[in-house]
Image (cartoon, rainbow, N blue to C red; front, side, top):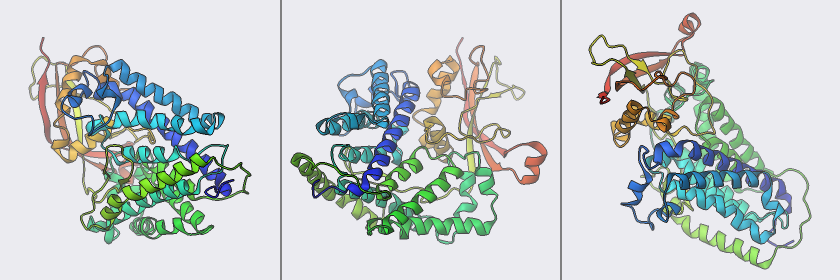
Length: 469
């Protein structure tokens, strides 16, 4: 069976492999559906403009070798097909020697997208997927027992995700230390979900319990992942329960779901299975992988111990061993950028403006927030950042407004399917952006009006842009 195998962990391996493949599939589908509008030749931040000024060694990607919009789509859809096959168990249908390269294929394809994805792919869960996907490539298949060292490397990854997030909070905003952050967070998070209104309306003592439970799970539980069973299983279960709470309370793309998948690496239930001895080359490969990760772990480990802890940082262009963290600071106020258009020839104080609607970000106060995670609405997220700091929007918001003026099909596909485009018969003459303060309604207002949000106009974010005749 091999001295590095752990036959009791066959179900943990199965859950991790299928889960990582599922997240890959979601990531590639998002790239296929949004990539042309965001990164295409005529997109908001075109990949050809990026590769012209960045060296391949800094951001390894297939798109340095060849670029076209069709090639990008081919990469995204190929990754989706391979991911779906892996989710269905394709790696168990091929010899062990083919398993590793089969798993490394979606990793290489997704790395190619992330490394040229610029601000649209600057989220911590992109590196998390790449690191988890790389490790999963060495879990083997049904021909050999689950390699215990790789399972521990996955636990080490989960430890960094949870413990890093816990430390960044305790070192960051004071509301984490006085247990008041969740008075605001459910309302001001990037993309509230369908239950976020109710989470926000929980009594203050329950918000304090939520925050305290978060600290326990992220600071005290992670070391227990390395304890003998059944302690490790109990620790993983605590992580899973906490992540499911976060899934219910908001939309954080696949961060929570992938964290749950990683926690499965520490679960153990069911009896052992018998496996033939692993080939020597596979055991050597496992040892080499462990040594490489141990060396590369110096940088994230040092970061965890630093009082200047960085959040969501990659230390190498392959995103192999990274540091993670989220929401070190919490916004007390929610601001939203709202795009509007008009068909009027001239803009006057009496001009009638119609709003564009986006699938996930708050807009119409009467529209209930929807569930999108684990799918990632990249433009919606960046518009949340743009409301916090105009610098986030400088490279792309005006270009997006121009594309709305042109009636660009790819730009319009980023809007909500129903009612997102208020100009179905032709593009507007002018487009502008306003900045609003949004608040969840109180229960009485919600019962009386059906509105989920109150909003207050703060001013003009982007002055009107015009379409030439």
